[in-house]
Length: 505
Ligand SMILES: NC(=O)N[C@H]1NC(=O)NC1=O
Ligand SMILES: [Zn+2]
Ligand SMILES: [Zn+2]
Image 1 (cartoon, helix red, strand yellow):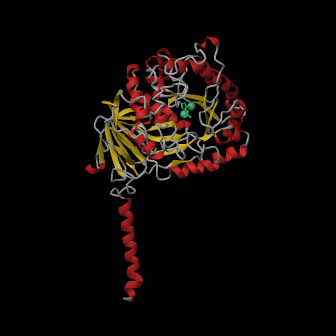
Image 2 (cartoon, rainbow, N blue to C red):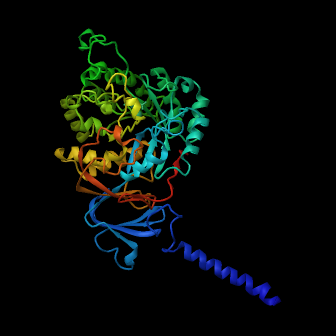
Image 3 (cartoon, rainbow, N blue to C red):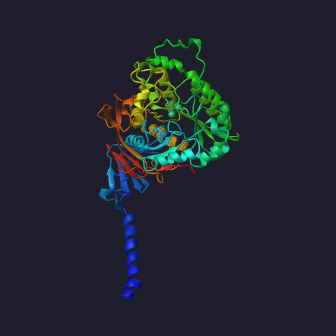
Protein backbone atom coordinates (compact mmCIF):
# COMPACT_ATOMS: atom_id res chain seq x y z
CA UNK A 1 0.00 0.00 0.00
CA UNK A 2 2.84 2.32 0.99
CA UNK A 3 4.60 1.51 -2.24
CA UNK A 4 1.42 2.15 -4.22
CA UNK A 5 0.93 5.51 -2.65
CA UNK A 6 4.46 6.75 -2.81
CA UNK A 7 5.58 5.48 -6.21
CA UNK A 8 2.80 4.16 -8.35
CA UNK A 9 0.18 6.82 -7.79
CA UNK A 10 2.35 9.75 -8.84
CA UNK A 11 3.43 7.78 -11.88
CA UNK A 12 -0.15 6.96 -12.79
CA UNK A 13 -1.14 10.58 -12.31
CA UNK A 14 1.68 11.68 -14.56
CA UNK A 15 0.67 9.14 -17.20
CA UNK A 16 -2.97 10.18 -17.03
CA UNK A 17 -2.22 13.89 -17.25
CA UNK A 18 0.08 13.30 -20.24
CA UNK A 19 -2.69 11.36 -21.93
CA UNK A 20 -5.18 14.13 -21.21
CA UNK A 21 -2.71 16.77 -22.40
CA UNK A 22 -2.19 14.85 -25.61
CA UNK A 23 -5.94 14.32 -26.04
CA UNK A 24 -6.83 17.98 -25.60
CA UNK A 25 -4.08 19.16 -27.91
CA UNK A 26 -5.03 16.68 -30.56
CA UNK A 27 -7.34 17.21 -33.50
CA UNK A 28 -10.31 16.09 -31.51
CA UNK A 29 -9.86 18.99 -29.12
CA UNK A 30 -13.15 20.80 -28.91
CA UNK A 31 -12.87 24.56 -29.37
CA UNK A 32 -13.41 26.68 -26.30
CA UNK A 33 -16.98 25.86 -25.35
CA UNK A 34 -19.44 27.65 -27.60
CA UNK A 35 -16.91 29.80 -29.45
CA UNK A 36 -17.12 27.86 -32.66
CA UNK A 37 -19.67 25.97 -34.71
CA UNK A 38 -17.02 23.38 -35.69
CA UNK A 39 -15.87 20.93 -33.06
CA UNK A 40 -12.21 20.76 -34.16
CA UNK A 41 -9.22 22.99 -33.81
CA UNK A 42 -7.36 21.41 -36.71
CA UNK A 43 -9.09 21.24 -40.07
CA UNK A 44 -8.88 22.03 -43.76
CA UNK A 45 -11.14 24.44 -45.65
CA UNK A 46 -11.25 23.42 -49.29
CA UNK A 47 -12.62 25.18 -52.35
CA UNK A 48 -12.02 25.76 -56.03
CA UNK A 49 -11.76 29.53 -55.45
CA UNK A 50 -9.40 30.48 -52.63
CA UNK A 51 -8.13 34.06 -52.86
CA UNK A 52 -4.45 34.19 -51.83
CA UNK A 53 -1.78 36.88 -52.34
CA UNK A 54 -0.51 34.66 -55.19
CA UNK A 55 -3.87 34.63 -56.94
CA UNK A 56 -7.03 32.54 -56.89
CA UNK A 57 -6.26 28.85 -56.38
CA UNK A 58 -8.16 25.59 -56.14
CA UNK A 59 -6.94 23.76 -53.04
CA UNK A 60 -7.02 23.86 -49.27
CA UNK A 61 -6.33 26.10 -46.31
CA UNK A 62 -5.10 24.25 -43.23
CA UNK A 63 -6.21 25.78 -39.94
CA UNK A 64 -4.67 24.82 -36.59
CA UNK A 65 -5.90 26.67 -33.54
CA UNK A 66 -6.05 30.36 -34.38
CA UNK A 67 -3.72 30.25 -37.37
CA UNK A 68 -3.42 29.27 -41.00
CA UNK A 69 -0.69 26.63 -41.06
CA UNK A 70 -0.63 25.80 -44.76
CA UNK A 71 -2.17 26.87 -48.04
CA UNK A 72 -2.05 24.17 -50.69
CA UNK A 73 -2.62 24.67 -54.40
CA UNK A 74 -4.08 21.43 -55.86
CA UNK A 75 -4.76 18.09 -54.23
CA UNK A 76 -1.53 17.47 -52.28
CA UNK A 77 -3.18 18.12 -48.93
CA UNK A 78 -5.31 14.96 -49.14
CA UNK A 79 -2.72 12.37 -47.95
CA UNK A 80 -3.37 11.76 -44.26
CA UNK A 81 -6.33 14.05 -43.76
CA UNK A 82 -9.42 12.48 -42.21
CA UNK A 83 -12.74 13.08 -43.92
CA UNK A 84 -14.27 14.71 -40.86
CA UNK A 85 -11.47 17.27 -40.77
CA UNK A 86 -12.39 18.68 -44.18
CA UNK A 87 -14.84 21.52 -44.62
CA UNK A 88 -15.44 21.48 -48.36
CA UNK A 89 -16.96 24.61 -49.86
CA UNK A 90 -17.02 23.44 -53.46
CA UNK A 91 -16.95 26.45 -55.77
CA UNK A 92 -17.72 29.06 -53.10
CA UNK A 93 -15.15 31.84 -52.69
CA UNK A 94 -12.81 31.52 -49.70
CA UNK A 95 -11.32 34.91 -48.94
CA UNK A 96 -9.70 36.78 -46.04
CA UNK A 97 -12.39 38.15 -43.72
CA UNK A 98 -13.21 41.81 -44.22
CA UNK A 99 -11.63 44.41 -41.94
CA UNK A 100 -13.91 47.36 -41.42
CA UNK A 101 -11.76 50.25 -40.17
CA UNK A 102 -14.70 52.60 -39.68
CA UNK A 103 -17.86 51.65 -37.77
CA UNK A 104 -19.81 53.17 -34.91
CA UNK A 105 -21.15 50.49 -32.56
CA UNK A 106 -22.26 53.05 -29.94
CA UNK A 107 -21.28 50.91 -26.94
CA UNK A 108 -21.20 51.81 -24.06
CA UNK A 109 -23.80 54.52 -23.54
CA UNK A 110 -25.96 54.36 -26.66
CA UNK A 111 -26.63 50.66 -26.96
CA UNK A 112 -30.20 51.45 -27.95
CA UNK A 113 -28.64 52.65 -31.24
CA UNK A 114 -26.56 49.47 -31.87
CA UNK A 115 -24.21 47.93 -29.29
CA UNK A 116 -21.42 45.35 -29.46
CA UNK A 117 -23.60 42.18 -29.55
CA UNK A 118 -25.86 43.13 -32.47
CA UNK A 119 -23.11 45.08 -34.24
CA UNK A 120 -20.61 42.25 -34.22
CA UNK A 121 -23.27 39.62 -35.03
CA UNK A 122 -24.18 41.69 -38.11
CA UNK A 123 -20.52 42.01 -39.00
CA UNK A 124 -19.97 38.24 -38.70
CA UNK A 125 -23.04 37.57 -40.85
CA UNK A 126 -21.56 39.94 -43.44
CA UNK A 127 -18.13 38.31 -43.57
CA UNK A 128 -16.39 40.97 -41.48
CA UNK A 129 -13.89 39.39 -39.09
CA UNK A 130 -12.30 42.55 -37.65
CA UNK A 131 -13.85 45.91 -37.00
CA UNK A 132 -12.29 49.08 -35.64
CA UNK A 133 -14.81 50.97 -33.56
CA UNK A 134 -15.03 54.76 -33.71
CA UNK A 135 -14.52 56.84 -30.55
CA UNK A 136 -17.79 58.77 -30.86
CA UNK A 137 -21.51 58.03 -30.68
CA UNK A 138 -20.83 55.86 -27.65
CA UNK A 139 -20.99 57.63 -24.30
CA UNK A 140 -18.59 58.74 -23.05
CA UNK A 141 -16.47 59.35 -26.14
CA UNK A 142 -13.14 57.49 -26.17
CA UNK A 143 -10.73 60.35 -25.56
CA UNK A 144 -8.59 59.16 -22.62
CA UNK A 145 -7.10 56.06 -21.06
CA UNK A 146 -10.08 55.84 -18.68
CA UNK A 147 -12.71 56.05 -21.38
CA UNK A 148 -10.85 53.49 -23.50
CA UNK A 149 -10.99 51.14 -20.50
CA UNK A 150 -14.78 51.60 -20.44
CA UNK A 151 -14.91 50.55 -24.12
CA UNK A 152 -12.81 47.46 -23.45
CA UNK A 153 -15.00 46.51 -20.50
CA UNK A 154 -18.15 46.99 -22.57
CA UNK A 155 -16.74 44.70 -25.26
CA UNK A 156 -15.82 41.89 -22.91
CA UNK A 157 -17.66 38.69 -23.84
CA UNK A 158 -20.01 40.70 -26.07
CA UNK A 159 -18.11 40.67 -29.36
CA UNK A 160 -18.46 37.89 -31.96
CA UNK A 161 -15.52 39.13 -34.03
CA UNK A 162 -12.26 40.91 -33.16
CA UNK A 163 -12.68 44.59 -32.37
CA UNK A 164 -10.08 47.34 -32.10
CA UNK A 165 -10.64 50.95 -31.04
CA UNK A 166 -9.70 54.34 -32.42
CA UNK A 167 -9.25 57.04 -29.80
CA UNK A 168 -10.62 60.54 -30.28
CA UNK A 169 -8.47 63.60 -30.96
CA UNK A 170 -10.43 66.54 -29.54
CA UNK A 171 -9.45 70.05 -28.35
CA UNK A 172 -9.40 68.76 -24.74
CA UNK A 173 -6.52 66.33 -25.37
CA UNK A 174 -4.82 67.71 -28.50
CA UNK A 175 -2.40 69.95 -26.57
CA UNK A 176 -2.13 67.53 -23.68
CA UNK A 177 0.55 65.08 -24.79
CA UNK A 178 0.33 62.98 -21.62
CA UNK A 179 -3.42 62.49 -22.06
CA UNK A 180 -2.89 61.44 -25.68
CA UNK A 181 -0.02 59.19 -24.74
CA UNK A 182 -2.15 57.61 -22.02
CA UNK A 183 -4.80 56.80 -24.62
CA UNK A 184 -2.27 55.41 -27.10
CA UNK A 185 -0.34 53.45 -24.48
CA UNK A 186 -3.61 51.91 -23.29
CA UNK A 187 -4.06 50.42 -26.77
CA UNK A 188 -5.91 52.82 -29.08
CA UNK A 189 -4.88 51.81 -32.60
CA UNK A 190 -4.72 55.45 -33.70
CA UNK A 191 -6.82 58.60 -33.44
CA UNK A 192 -9.85 60.07 -35.16
CA UNK A 193 -10.95 63.69 -35.41
CA UNK A 194 -13.55 65.91 -37.07
CA UNK A 195 -12.99 69.18 -38.94
CA UNK A 196 -16.69 70.09 -38.66
CA UNK A 197 -19.29 69.53 -35.92
CA UNK A 198 -19.63 65.79 -35.34
CA UNK A 199 -23.25 65.83 -34.28
CA UNK A 200 -22.20 64.59 -30.84
CA UNK A 201 -21.77 67.18 -28.09
CA UNK A 202 -18.89 65.54 -26.25
CA UNK A 203 -16.88 65.14 -29.46
CA UNK A 204 -15.98 68.69 -30.56
CA UNK A 205 -14.16 69.45 -33.78
CA UNK A 206 -10.45 70.07 -34.26
CA UNK A 207 -8.56 72.55 -36.44
CA UNK A 208 -5.24 72.20 -38.24
CA UNK A 209 -3.18 73.09 -35.17
CA UNK A 210 -4.86 70.36 -33.07
CA UNK A 211 -4.18 67.96 -35.90
CA UNK A 212 -0.54 69.01 -36.19
CA UNK A 213 -0.09 68.31 -32.47
CA UNK A 214 -1.87 64.99 -32.77
CA UNK A 215 0.37 63.91 -35.64
CA UNK A 216 3.51 64.74 -33.68
CA UNK A 217 2.43 62.42 -30.84
CA UNK A 218 1.27 59.71 -33.25
CA UNK A 219 4.68 59.78 -34.98
CA UNK A 220 6.24 58.32 -31.85
CA UNK A 221 3.74 55.44 -31.85
CA UNK A 222 3.72 55.01 -35.66
CA UNK A 223 -0.08 55.09 -35.70
CA UNK A 224 -2.54 56.90 -37.97
CA UNK A 225 -4.90 59.83 -37.58
CA UNK A 226 -8.26 59.42 -39.31
CA UNK A 227 -10.02 62.63 -40.21
CA UNK A 228 -13.59 63.46 -41.10
CA UNK A 229 -12.66 65.99 -43.75
CA UNK A 230 -15.32 68.62 -44.19
CA UNK A 231 -14.99 72.28 -43.18
CA UNK A 232 -18.15 74.29 -43.00
CA UNK A 233 -18.06 77.07 -45.65
CA UNK A 234 -20.31 80.04 -45.95
CA UNK A 235 -22.84 79.05 -48.54
CA UNK A 236 -22.38 81.15 -51.63
CA UNK A 237 -25.32 83.19 -52.76
CA UNK A 238 -25.36 81.08 -55.92
CA UNK A 239 -25.57 77.79 -53.97
CA UNK A 240 -29.22 77.52 -54.90
CA UNK A 241 -30.28 77.39 -51.24
CA UNK A 242 -32.83 80.02 -50.32
CA UNK A 243 -33.07 80.69 -46.62
CA UNK A 244 -35.87 78.70 -45.06
CA UNK A 245 -38.01 78.27 -48.13
CA UNK A 246 -36.46 75.16 -49.59
CA UNK A 247 -38.25 71.88 -49.24
CA UNK A 248 -36.55 70.06 -46.36
CA UNK A 249 -37.98 66.79 -47.69
CA UNK A 250 -36.07 67.16 -50.92
CA UNK A 251 -32.65 65.50 -50.97
CA UNK A 252 -31.30 68.25 -53.23
CA UNK A 253 -31.85 70.77 -50.42
CA UNK A 254 -29.56 68.75 -48.16
CA UNK A 255 -27.00 68.22 -50.92
CA UNK A 256 -26.80 71.96 -51.59
CA UNK A 257 -26.32 72.61 -47.87
CA UNK A 258 -23.12 70.52 -47.84
CA UNK A 259 -21.32 71.06 -51.15
CA UNK A 260 -18.08 69.38 -52.22
CA UNK A 261 -16.22 72.63 -51.46
CA UNK A 262 -16.46 71.61 -47.77
CA UNK A 263 -14.44 68.48 -48.45
CA UNK A 264 -12.02 70.33 -50.67
CA UNK A 265 -11.43 73.04 -48.04
CA UNK A 266 -10.75 70.45 -45.33
CA UNK A 267 -8.32 68.49 -47.45
CA UNK A 268 -6.50 71.63 -48.55
CA UNK A 269 -6.05 72.51 -44.87
CA UNK A 270 -4.95 69.00 -43.94
CA UNK A 271 -2.26 69.01 -46.58
CA UNK A 272 -0.58 71.94 -44.83
CA UNK A 273 0.17 69.53 -41.95
CA UNK A 274 0.61 66.19 -43.73
CA UNK A 275 3.88 67.59 -45.12
CA UNK A 276 5.24 66.81 -41.64
CA UNK A 277 4.75 63.07 -42.27
CA UNK A 278 7.25 62.95 -45.15
CA UNK A 279 10.54 61.08 -44.73
CA UNK A 280 12.76 63.30 -42.61
CA UNK A 281 9.79 65.50 -41.60
CA UNK A 282 8.96 66.35 -37.95
CA UNK A 283 6.05 63.84 -37.85
CA UNK A 284 7.68 61.04 -39.85
CA UNK A 285 6.04 57.77 -38.73
CA UNK A 286 2.58 59.33 -38.36
CA UNK A 287 0.03 58.79 -41.09
CA UNK A 288 -3.10 60.63 -42.13
CA UNK A 289 -6.16 58.78 -43.39
CA UNK A 290 -9.09 60.63 -44.91
CA UNK A 291 -12.34 58.87 -44.07
CA UNK A 292 -15.41 58.48 -46.27
CA UNK A 293 -14.45 60.62 -49.26
CA UNK A 294 -17.47 61.57 -51.32
CA UNK A 295 -16.11 64.32 -53.61
CA UNK A 296 -14.38 62.70 -56.59
CA UNK A 297 -13.17 65.94 -58.18
CA UNK A 298 -10.86 68.57 -56.63
CA UNK A 299 -10.49 66.68 -53.33
CA UNK A 300 -9.10 63.66 -55.11
CA UNK A 301 -6.68 65.75 -57.14
CA UNK A 302 -5.32 67.27 -53.95
CA UNK A 303 -4.81 63.84 -52.38
CA UNK A 304 -3.11 62.56 -55.51
CA UNK A 305 -0.72 65.51 -55.40
CA UNK A 306 0.11 64.95 -51.71
CA UNK A 307 0.81 61.27 -52.30
CA UNK A 308 3.21 62.06 -55.11
CA UNK A 309 5.00 64.56 -52.84
CA UNK A 310 5.64 61.77 -50.34
CA UNK A 311 3.05 62.66 -47.68
CA UNK A 312 1.99 59.60 -45.69
CA UNK A 313 -1.69 59.76 -46.62
CA UNK A 314 -4.46 57.35 -47.62
CA UNK A 315 -8.16 57.70 -48.34
CA UNK A 316 -11.24 55.51 -48.05
CA UNK A 317 -14.70 55.74 -49.51
CA UNK A 318 -17.83 53.81 -48.53
CA UNK A 319 -20.20 51.50 -50.39
CA UNK A 320 -23.07 54.02 -50.16
CA UNK A 321 -21.14 56.56 -52.24
CA UNK A 322 -20.54 53.82 -54.83
CA UNK A 323 -24.06 52.39 -54.83
CA UNK A 324 -26.39 55.38 -54.67
CA UNK A 325 -26.69 58.73 -56.43
CA UNK A 326 -28.39 61.96 -55.34
CA UNK A 327 -30.80 61.87 -58.28
CA UNK A 328 -32.45 58.65 -57.14
CA UNK A 329 -32.96 59.46 -53.44
CA UNK A 330 -36.72 59.77 -52.83
CA UNK A 331 -38.18 62.79 -51.11
CA UNK A 332 -38.27 62.40 -47.34
CA UNK A 333 -36.23 59.15 -47.36
CA UNK A 334 -33.76 60.08 -44.63
CA UNK A 335 -32.31 56.57 -44.56
CA UNK A 336 -29.95 58.01 -47.21
CA UNK A 337 -28.79 60.96 -45.13
CA UNK A 338 -25.09 60.92 -44.33
CA UNK A 339 -22.15 63.31 -44.21
CA UNK A 340 -20.52 64.07 -46.51
CA UNK A 341 -23.61 63.62 -48.65
CA UNK A 342 -24.14 61.18 -51.50
CA UNK A 343 -23.51 63.25 -54.67
CA UNK A 344 -24.68 62.93 -58.28
CA UNK A 345 -24.28 59.96 -60.60
CA UNK A 346 -21.38 61.53 -62.49
CA UNK A 347 -19.48 61.87 -59.20
CA UNK A 348 -20.24 58.23 -58.35
CA UNK A 349 -18.79 57.20 -61.71
CA UNK A 350 -15.59 59.10 -60.93
CA UNK A 351 -15.36 57.51 -57.46
CA UNK A 352 -15.43 54.07 -59.07
CA UNK A 353 -12.75 55.13 -61.52
CA UNK A 354 -10.53 56.41 -58.70
CA UNK A 355 -11.04 53.23 -56.71
CA UNK A 356 -10.23 51.00 -59.68
CA UNK A 357 -7.14 53.07 -60.51
CA UNK A 358 -5.88 52.87 -56.92
CA UNK A 359 -6.26 56.57 -56.06
CA UNK A 360 -8.77 55.57 -53.40
CA UNK A 361 -6.98 53.06 -51.21
CA UNK A 362 -9.70 51.17 -49.41
CA UNK A 363 -13.33 50.86 -48.37
CA UNK A 364 -15.08 51.05 -45.02
CA UNK A 365 -18.71 50.90 -43.93
CA UNK A 366 -19.07 54.06 -41.79
CA UNK A 367 -21.96 52.12 -40.29
CA UNK A 368 -23.54 54.88 -38.20
CA UNK A 369 -26.98 53.86 -36.96
CA UNK A 370 -29.30 55.60 -34.54
CA UNK A 371 -32.72 54.82 -33.13
CA UNK A 372 -35.37 55.04 -35.90
CA UNK A 373 -36.99 58.03 -34.17
CA UNK A 374 -33.94 60.19 -34.91
CA UNK A 375 -34.34 59.52 -38.64
CA UNK A 376 -37.59 61.55 -38.43
CA UNK A 377 -39.37 59.37 -40.99
CA UNK A 378 -42.70 61.10 -40.38
CA UNK A 379 -41.42 64.55 -41.27
CA UNK A 380 -38.77 63.32 -43.72
CA UNK A 381 -36.73 66.40 -42.83
CA UNK A 382 -33.28 65.95 -44.40
CA UNK A 383 -31.82 68.90 -42.50
CA UNK A 384 -32.77 67.72 -39.01
CA UNK A 385 -32.65 63.91 -39.28
CA UNK A 386 -29.71 61.91 -37.91
CA UNK A 387 -26.97 61.58 -40.54
CA UNK A 388 -25.61 58.07 -40.84
CA UNK A 389 -25.98 55.02 -43.07
CA UNK A 390 -26.67 51.56 -41.67
CA UNK A 391 -24.84 49.01 -43.75
CA UNK A 392 -22.55 46.81 -41.69
CA UNK A 393 -23.97 43.43 -42.68
CA UNK A 394 -24.25 44.32 -46.37
CA UNK A 395 -20.93 45.84 -47.39
CA UNK A 396 -19.55 42.76 -49.16
CA UNK A 397 -22.61 42.03 -51.34
CA UNK A 398 -23.07 45.76 -52.00
CA UNK A 399 -19.48 46.28 -53.17
CA UNK A 400 -19.76 43.18 -55.33
CA UNK A 401 -23.23 43.84 -56.72
CA UNK A 402 -22.55 47.43 -57.73
CA UNK A 403 -18.94 46.70 -58.73
CA UNK A 404 -19.66 43.90 -61.17
CA UNK A 405 -20.42 46.24 -64.03
CA UNK A 406 -16.94 47.72 -63.57
CA UNK A 407 -15.37 44.25 -63.71
CA UNK A 408 -14.30 44.23 -60.04
CA UNK A 409 -12.15 41.19 -59.28
CA UNK A 410 -11.92 39.08 -56.14
CA UNK A 411 -8.35 40.28 -55.67
CA UNK A 412 -9.52 43.89 -55.73
CA UNK A 413 -12.15 43.13 -53.07
CA UNK A 414 -9.42 41.65 -50.88
CA UNK A 415 -7.16 44.63 -51.40
CA UNK A 416 -9.88 47.20 -50.56
CA UNK A 417 -11.53 45.27 -47.72
CA UNK A 418 -8.72 43.27 -46.11
CA UNK A 419 -5.11 43.92 -47.09
CA UNK A 420 -5.04 47.71 -46.96
CA UNK A 421 -7.34 48.04 -43.92
CA UNK A 422 -5.04 45.56 -42.11
CA UNK A 423 -2.07 47.76 -42.91
CA UNK A 424 -3.82 50.97 -41.84
CA UNK A 425 -4.83 49.49 -38.50
CA UNK A 426 -1.47 47.79 -37.90
CA UNK A 427 -2.85 44.24 -37.98
CA UNK A 428 0.09 42.26 -39.34
CA UNK A 429 -1.52 38.92 -38.53
CA UNK A 430 -4.65 39.73 -40.48
CA UNK A 431 -5.77 40.59 -44.00
CA UNK A 432 -4.52 37.66 -46.09
CA UNK A 433 -4.88 33.92 -46.55
CA UNK A 434 -1.25 33.03 -45.95
CA UNK A 435 0.75 30.80 -43.60
CA UNK A 436 1.17 32.31 -40.14
CA UNK A 437 -1.80 34.66 -40.42
CA UNK A 438 -4.90 34.47 -38.25
CA UNK A 439 -7.51 32.14 -39.71
CA UNK A 440 -9.93 35.02 -40.36
CA UNK A 441 -11.91 33.85 -43.36
CA UNK A 442 -15.16 34.52 -45.18
CA UNK A 443 -16.79 31.94 -47.44
CA UNK A 444 -19.33 33.37 -49.86
CA UNK A 445 -21.18 32.69 -53.09
CA UNK A 446 -20.88 35.66 -55.47
CA UNK A 447 -23.52 34.22 -57.78
CA UNK A 448 -26.36 33.82 -55.26
CA UNK A 449 -28.87 36.67 -55.39
CA UNK A 450 -31.24 37.62 -52.60
CA UNK A 451 -33.86 40.21 -51.77
CA UNK A 452 -33.23 42.31 -48.71
CA UNK A 453 -36.81 42.19 -47.54
CA UNK A 454 -38.48 41.63 -44.18
CA UNK A 455 -37.84 37.88 -44.45
CA UNK A 456 -34.10 38.29 -44.72
CA UNK A 457 -32.24 37.77 -41.43
CA UNK A 458 -30.63 41.13 -40.61
CA UNK A 459 -28.84 41.40 -37.27
CA UNK A 460 -28.55 45.20 -37.04
CA UNK A 461 -30.43 46.51 -34.01
CA UNK A 462 -32.65 48.57 -36.35
CA UNK A 463 -32.80 46.94 -39.80
CA UNK A 464 -35.53 49.31 -40.97
CA UNK A 465 -33.25 52.37 -41.04
CA UNK A 466 -30.92 50.85 -43.65
CA UNK A 467 -31.10 52.37 -47.13
CA UNK A 468 -30.31 48.94 -48.58
CA UNK A 469 -33.57 47.36 -47.38
CA UNK A 470 -35.75 46.69 -50.37
CA UNK A 471 -32.85 46.17 -52.76
CA UNK A 472 -31.77 42.96 -54.49
CA UNK A 473 -28.13 42.02 -53.96
CA UNK A 474 -25.77 39.39 -55.20
CA UNK A 475 -23.18 37.65 -53.02
CA UNK A 476 -24.29 35.54 -50.10
CA UNK A 477 -22.07 34.96 -47.08
CA UNK A 478 -22.09 31.25 -46.15
CA UNK A 479 -19.56 31.09 -43.33
CA UNK A 480 -17.26 33.33 -41.31
CA UNK A 481 -14.22 32.18 -39.32
CA UNK A 482 -12.47 34.35 -36.73
CA UNK A 483 -9.07 33.06 -35.54
CA UNK A 484 -10.14 29.53 -36.45
CA UNK A 485 -13.56 29.71 -34.77
CA UNK A 486 -16.51 29.24 -37.10
CA UNK A 487 -18.53 32.18 -35.75
CA UNK A 488 -21.29 32.27 -38.37
CA UNK A 489 -22.75 29.64 -40.63
CA UNK A 490 -25.87 29.96 -42.76
CA UNK A 491 -28.02 32.00 -40.41
CA UNK A 492 -26.51 30.74 -37.17
CA UNK A 493 -23.97 32.36 -34.87
CA UNK A 494 -21.69 30.55 -32.44
CA UNK A 495 -23.38 30.50 -29.03
CA UNK A 496 -20.58 32.38 -27.23
CA UNK A 497 -19.07 35.74 -28.15
CA UNK A 498 -15.36 34.92 -28.33
CA UNK A 499 -13.98 37.85 -30.33
CA UNK A 500 -11.06 39.59 -28.70
CA UNK A 501 -10.53 43.29 -28.08
CA UNK A 502 -7.49 44.30 -30.16
CA UNK A 503 -5.13 46.60 -28.31
CA UNK A 504 -2.06 48.22 -29.84
CA UNK A 505 1.19 47.39 -28.11
N1 LIG B 1 -21.41 61.10 -35.63
C1 LIG B 1 -21.41 60.32 -36.74
O1 LIG B 1 -21.47 59.10 -36.67
N2 LIG B 1 -21.34 60.91 -37.93
C2 LIG B 1 -21.26 60.13 -39.10
N3 LIG B 1 -22.49 60.00 -39.78
C3 LIG B 1 -22.32 60.35 -41.05
O2 LIG B 1 -23.17 60.31 -41.92
N4 LIG B 1 -21.10 60.84 -41.25
C4 LIG B 1 -20.44 60.80 -40.12
O3 LIG B 1 -19.34 61.24 -39.93
ZN1 LIG C 1 -17.39 61.05 -40.43
ZN1 LIG D 1 -18.10 57.71 -39.08
